[in-house]
Image 1 (cartoon, rainbow, N blue to C red):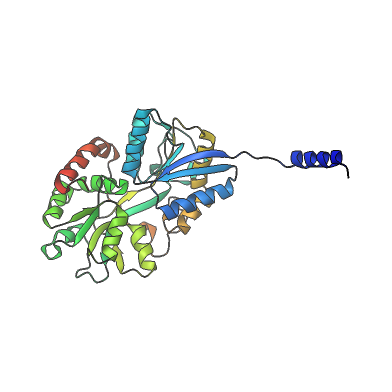
Image 2: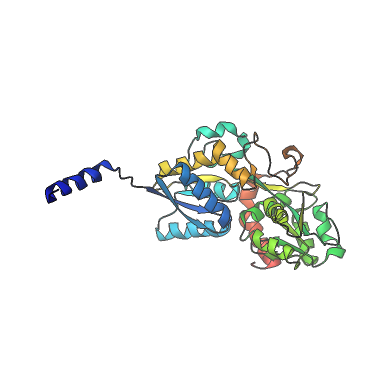
Length: 325
């Protein structure tokens, strides 16, 4: 075979192989690192033409980062997957989100997403009371944590860092039997804030603290792995975040972002949520092992508009009371 024939064969082979240029989708998320990696890997399996580059941090820190990027004229993410709808409402009011009417929304209750399509809840995450298996008292009420016999035994995530903690604070503020006075009594009883929910989990499992405000899945997962921790849904009810997803208005890959939203809301995406150990937003799916029946979980009322208006005041009051944890 002469050199001309070899060159011809190489050219024929090269043009017969399709070359796919992957598009890049930039994601900011507050999901735990392990869960975020599973989410990205599963999405990329269904959409191999999209490469997801992601950054993980607490919701409050991600919001601060986005504002700093906007002020500097830097690029912002294509899509957000963060803890709470309150942060999404803030971005929506600033005109920073793009509306998208996902065809998958028909599978969800209307309260789980913005009616104009600015964001969509993807799962249900409640905040209740976690406690060490050897704790002296099994709590059943939020008020148990301010009893004198539990002095210096409680910890909680900071709303200055955690979106779920921010929602929880706003929810308790809306409860006439709790409110700001409850936080003051927690402080008097020696409650000590941590940064986020992960730090609360570590404090309880290590025995450093006996009780804490904690998101459900962290305690239930840890218990399943043999950690000395229990979780209770207090009788007054629990707060809830829905880990919404949204497209940034300045997205450089809006089509990829739409596919990401559709995937998370699809049966495949919601089954991934279930396998990760969360309550899926799709009510047709069951709850993970270790959770009570979906209809037995009592949710405390949440006034989104009031919470949005009072966000900065609530944060300021918390910082003044507990310090900038």
